[in-house]
Image (cartoon, rainbow, N blue to C red; front, side, top):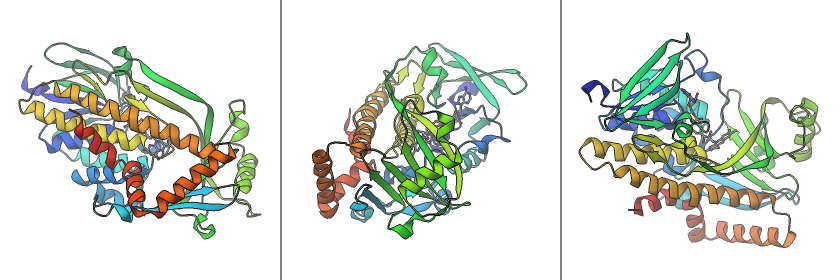
Length: 405
Ligand SMILES: Cc1cc2nc3c(=O)[nH]c(=O)nc-3n(C[C@H](O)[C@H](O)[C@H](O)COP(=O)(O)OP(=O)(O)OC[C@H]3O[C@@H](n4cnc5c(N)ncnc54)[C@H](O)[C@@H]3O)c2cc1C
């Protein structure tokens, strides 16, 4: 291998790819990022993920990203669990009980689009990171000495790049994962989730910035985002047979919102999208010099806001291993990355998000009551609330991964 290829090739300038590059640079390692979107359309992406948990905020802070995100987000120390049919607040959890566990006893509501905008600016300013925008990765080859990535720019001009490792941070449709013939194990929910973005202050009805609203017929999630425009995201379930176009008609969305909160006046709808939810984890996170991280390794329901967060945790875990390998430690550290992060993807992220959805849509009245009583008990007892929030803010999963050898 020549000196010029002593770097990590990263596919995708999403939050995971960018954080990986920034953390590697902090450890003195060079990287090249391929991003298919060009500078001109990079910010045209839908906002997507937005709840950043305490464990992730510590990581952002470590690379200097947190200070850029905080002014663009909403600090949310509370979250609520509501019973929609009864219009009752069941439980209020306050992250203040985590004050001895983290410097960030809250979640930061800051959407993916803002995270990538800030992280991309930092990556471009870093001399150890080469960012190739408007460059579509198309495939790669590996041997005992390194990897060669193949890409093409907007005019179709072919490019190659050499590196010691390649990390797929290109999202759920990962070409790297497919080329490695790695199974994406799991399932896809038949129903889709309707996301409606509304400029309306729901706090005047007792809601806080993050709300989970259970209902046997129509559960919801309700989240507050900083503007402009200042807005709230409301999630609704849909039936598999429902026509996507009909679901996103203005009158249909207004009717749904009025069903949720009858104000008698039309809501100011500023955006909407309908998405399919998958629960999948790659059977392997690594083959040779090719490694998967973030959505290319695992995708899950957004209920609980764990997808982006656990992807960032992959990036930090992997960067730590790669830096140690660069300093002469054994390559088997990459197997440890897989053992630690795959375990978390299956046992925490996937298990928890499946449970979250079940809890929201439970139909049996007796089970619903039991679940709600339990949530109330946990929220009211500071010791139980701390345990609950250590889990939901992903601090526990980071600690558990570190214990795996
Ligand atoms: C509606 C919605 C709401 C969500 N809400 C939350 C939430 O509240 N909290 C949470 O934690 N998660 C949430 N998620 C999940 C979250 O968005 C993802 O987990 C996260 O964005 C994954 O980051 P990533 O960097 O792995 O991949 P991505 O964000 O998908 O980024 C992949 C990047 O790779 C680029 N790319 C892809 N293919 C190529 C190629 N061939 N060549 C070059 N570049 C390529 C893409 O353009 C993109 O920039 C949500 C998802 C959706 C859809």
